[in-house]
Each structure stands twice: as C-alpha cells, then as structure tokens.
Image (cartoon, rainbow, N blue to C red):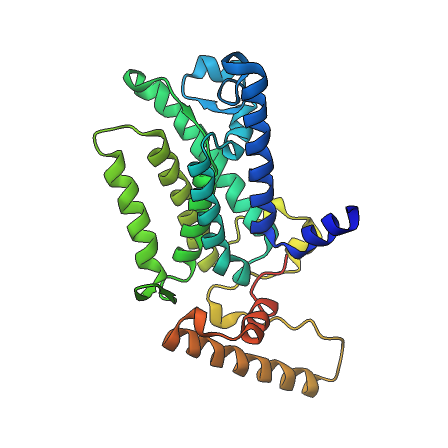
Length: 283
C-alpha cells in the first residue's frame, strides 16, 4: 500500500501535488467543523480575517487561508483553475518557480485584504479563503510572459494576452461598487504575476532569491520562448557542441511555428516533452 501511494505521488506533477493537499485539507477542515462546531471551525482558526485586531490574534492565517476551501464547489472550481494554470506553466517553467509565484501572490493578496480593512473600515468584517489569488498570479505570469502565444479552447484559438485581460476585467467588474475580498485578492495576485513576468522579459528574475544560490546562478533567464535552449550535454568538441545546439534550436523553432499555426494542443506528446526539457528554466 505504501509503495502504491509513493508511486502515485511520484506520478503527479506540481499541480497534482497542490490538488492533493487541497483535498486533504478540505476533508480535515470538514472533520474539524463536524467535531468542534463553530467555536473551533475552519473559519475561526484558519481563514484570514479582514479586521486587523482579529488578524493579530491569529497571524498564521496569512499563510493558511490559501489552502482553506469551505464549500465543495469552491474546491472544485479552484481545482479546475489549478489544472488550467499548470497546463502551460509547467512546460515553460520549473516547479520551484510555480511555488514561488503562488506563495508571493497568495501572501500579497492577504496583506492587501487586511490593508483594505484598515483603509475602508465601513467594509470591515468577513474572511478570505481559497487558493485563487495565487492561481491568478500563475495564470497572469504566463499570459504576460508569452502574450502572443495562441492556445486552443473549445470555441477556437485565442492568444494568452486576451485570456489574461478577460480575467482581470471580470474581477474589476465584480469589484465595482462592492469591496469584495475575492475580487481584491484576485487582482492582487494578477499584479504579482504581471510584475514578475515583465521583469523576467527584461532579464531580471525576481524568483532567484528564493532558490538555492548555486542553482539560481547557474541559470540565465530568457526573455522570449525562442531563446529556450540550454545545453546540458557532456563536454564534447566545440564543433559537435555547436552542431547539437543548432539542431535542437531548429527543432524548437519548428515546434514554436506549429504552436503559432495550430495552437499548443496540436503538439504531439514527444514535442511537448522535448519543449519541456529544453525550457528556459530548470531550476
């Protein structure tokens, strides 16, 4: 049984690990609510309160609220968004970068939520829960890093930048006339993803401070997807090395042309795997 669990865990990618954590924590919170009732419920112990006085009595909620989902529909919707965010992100970037962006997006959203309670006291009260702020940071990060990259949805192809814009506009509309915690958190996460992506495109990798020094310094961030090749082959002659690099770069260019023409979903499993292996970031 233990070996099966270990095998299952190893078969999952980062998004799969996150979903497993979310489901386990959801079940744990439901059990806690059933055993202890409202006095020691998931909201009272783990959700992020907007009132600063209440937050100071439970400062750990800044780190726990992003894992708490109180209703099954909330859990399911965020699970779908996690899968959507990971589909392209983990083909371009590493799991370490995934976790960095998610955590910074979640923490920034939480801090802004508490600040909103101080600036707008008439809107104080309520609690923030859910992973969606961090997920929004992941989605906008990819959309801002490769805005012209087309992907295929059920109604046809659409460029990533339009998906990002649509998500932000929806939250702005939801925020209009109502200081909603969810929309505010989403916008904070979107801002984090945008800032990180813009800096990466300009050659500044804001995630490096969270990575081990040696591994971070051994990677030079790339500003566009067409500069993804980084040779990891053993030492060979200069001619052989250059020939291998040129061959791989031609294959990458052909894959990128195929994405531009037919969308990412048109790639074969071998092409997706090759693109992932040659990605700009293997931290």
